[in-house]
Length: 283
Image 1 (cartoon, rainbow, N blue to C red):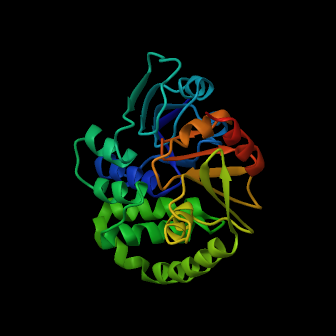
Image 2 (cartoon, helix red, strand yellow; image 1 turned 90 degrees about the horizontal axis):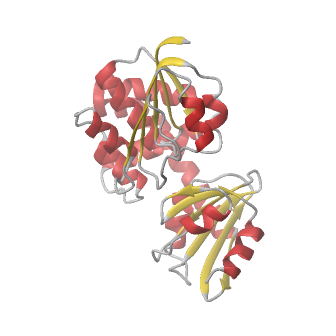
Image 3 (cartoon, helix red, strand yellow; image 1 turned 30 degrees about the vertical axis):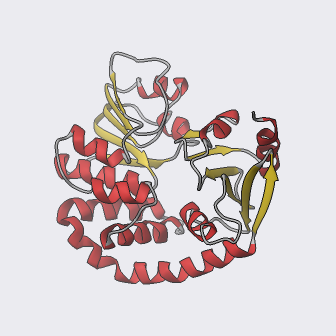
């Protein structure tokens, strides 16, 4: 068993901000893994430590069992799920009413840090310049092969210097703004509208991966908006992201395919046509 702390956090803005918050409390002397719902189990199979923290990723019975091989485990998340088992050495802090995992990390460690920014980004209601910058910086890094290294360095800078660190990333922000324009054009070009069971659906299947929030925002300006269900995927992915303009419960669709998330923002490994077929059988 490895000594010290290992942190597994989601490879997105909320996960990075959760990590930065933790580092403000405990310093940055820890091993960090960035993961995602589909990859969590394989990540945990490689880990066995005295102390393990998991942020912003929902678990399964199998992933909880793997996590419990470590000594002391803390699991903080805001997605909708209920642990199927509760080993004695695993503490769960799950609150699906929270807007972000970062807000729960801040609450748990009794520190005010980046929770408001994380809330804005994770609910796609970005209004502050700071949240806008963080989202663009993370978006820029996501497109890089060594994204995890950049995520870690960014989290360390935020923990050390706070939001002043954002000034170090002006070039990355400008570069991402150029990327945004190309993403928006892809959404416009590769969107198609369907009616299934009286449900208005927008399907966005692009040649390369794009940020889901970009598709969501572009489609709010579509002539046929609002859409009950938005399906976003790419030719490079076997995963679909599900969103809604109208409050439709997309989580129940994701769960048909073993996915999860929130009522208005979910994802799963599935083919678009299979998702459309599943929707046609919903009552």
